[in-house]
Every structure is written in structure tokens, then in C-alpha cells.
Image (cartoon, rainbow, N blue to C red; front, side):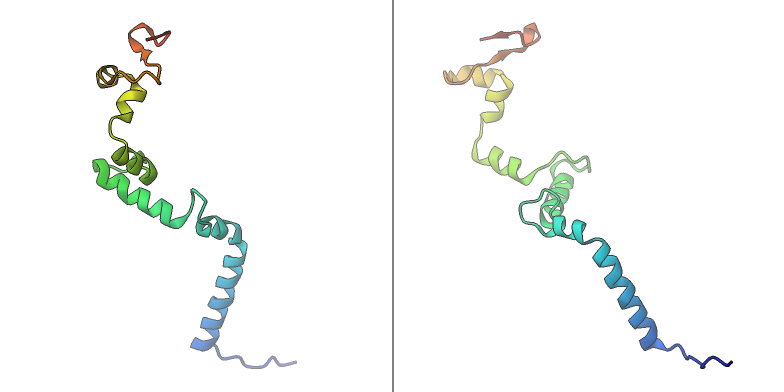
Amino acid sequence: MKFPQVKIDGVMVLALLAAAGLVWLYSKRADAAKALTPTSDQNLAYSAVNAVGDVLNDGSDNNDFSLGSWIYEVTHPGDAELFLGTSAAEASGNPGLAIIDTSNNGSKLK
């Protein structure tokens, strides 16, 4: 029994690559859903903006940047000092927020 002669050409290679690509994409559909869901923290746009902001923020890639946090810090100047209990917060006299006294291991409130 003789097998038919098969010529492999460019169209056949492209078709096989396309089929393999579709199988691979199908196997990664859960990861693709996370990457495209607008509310996911693994969203491609979210990850890209934070990665670029991280490098532009301090020049190193150490994952310490969040666009949402940056927007909050820009629109609420002085809040970081209030939460950290620095002298600027004490000078502001904000009665609605207890300042932690860090000189005694944070055990007393001012």
C-alpha cells in the first residue's frame, strides 16, 4: 500500500500555526478573562499604567506605585501626614482622627 504524496507549502504551515494558536488561546481563556475584565487588578491597562508609573515614580521597578493611590495623594494633600502621625498632622489639629504616638511603640493615642 502506497501513501499519497503530501506537499507541505506555506498555506499548510500557516493553517497549522493558526490551529495551534487557537488551541493555545482556548486553554488560556481564564487568564484572558482576567486581563480584559475592567474591574480586575490583573487588567492589562491597570498593570501597564502601574508598571510605567512605578518606573517613572522613583526610577526603579519595585512595584510600589498605584495610579489610584497617586490620584488620591494629589487630590488630598496632607492626608498622608494625618495617617502617619507626623508633626504636620499634629499642627493641623484635626479632632476627628486619633494620632498614634510612635515614640512609645504605638501603644498610646494622643
